[in-house]
Image (tube, rainbow, N blue to C red; front, side, top):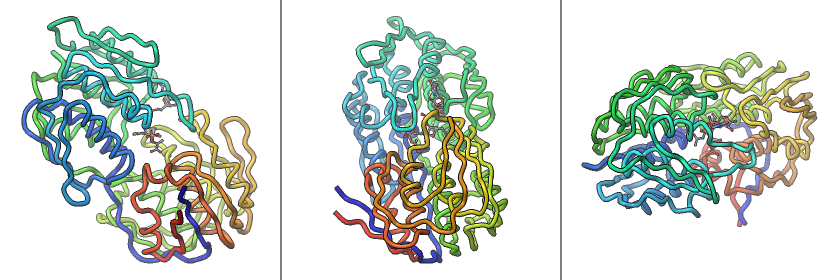
Length: 421
Ligand SMILES: CC(=O)N[C@H]1[C@@H](OP(=O)(O)OP(=O)(O)OC[C@H]2O[C@@H](n3ccc(=O)[nH]c3=O)[C@H](O)[C@@H]2O)O[C@H](CO)[C@@H](O)[C@@H]1O
Ligand SMILES: C=C(OP(=O)(O)O)C(=O)O
């Protein structure tokens, strides 16, 4: 088992480059199996554990996935001929469920294991299923699987779908399926995340007709077939936000190259509110100083609200801001697993339901801690960078799902961090 050893206290400084977004590339690779002609070339692909998993999932369905260099993938999906996704791979990663919509549209039937919950919540897929049913599929849920079928010889039928929750994954799965449906589909109360826009851009490059992505009404005119296309993945706003907060935690001066400030508005606004200096330009974001001198209230919400995927990292920073800060997690019901670990490092946090009250302490102290999920892990690394003494972060497989060479990147900007086996 590997772990990070972090000796806290170094001020971070310099420039760090953002990779392509994990949460954009996963649906894009799922969508690539919609192409019955041509090949896709996807650039700025971060070769993360999750990206490897989705590549294996589509590989088992008959797609040929070839890596070129560090960040390019070529996908040939012409021979996709399987309709059952590999169960052990799906169980490994929830986002594998995103192959359900494309498979159903391409093959007329699909079976994918129920992804189940994880450390942050139960994470049901009822909105995905509601979408497939509205598009004309018969859906059975049982024995740990979701199976969807179209009547013999029929295509999915365009329809109007109102999502009860602005679910990112359900919006993506329905968008992908509807791209090959007969007629027009309208998704109302759709999620508006930048990763949805990126998926729509890729689908449109494949020959789909998706309009309105990034708003809460998405219109999709179905087409008969899609072809492979070239696409460059958007920068990872969560990785970028993690570096911004890591720098602030150490009172550093870091330029996060490639970060799109428009995608990070709520994070930047909160950091400025805490008294941290942030400079934005077209090529990136610079954060100067920190950790800040004023407590904050933060509530997670669907985009463009404060991202739940930045909640844990922000909480790490709040542990050392003066006064009482409040964090309300409204997207997932159980995303406070990092609290107990931050407490081990001296943080003063009380949790009541979905709200955490954080009373700032002057400094955290290094301790042995364990990541329970991806962003909890990032929060513990941030805490370790600012803490006095040595912090040992275990559970690195969670962190590796979403951060490429995190320790190398942090070391390049001055952190004292190493991975030991
Ligand atoms: C791979 C990926 O892109 N993951 C992101 C995606 O996850 P994911 O797509 O799973 O998140 P959703 O937006 O679907 O989930 C939001 C909320 O809706 C609930 N829900 C969702 C679907 C459904 O059918 N029924 C239902 O009740 C979930 O349990 C959760 O409480 O968006 C989340 C919210 O921004 C992020 O934290 C994840 O990092
Ligand atoms: C929760 C996350 O990912 P996933 O939906 O893949 O679990 C995340 O990226 O923070």
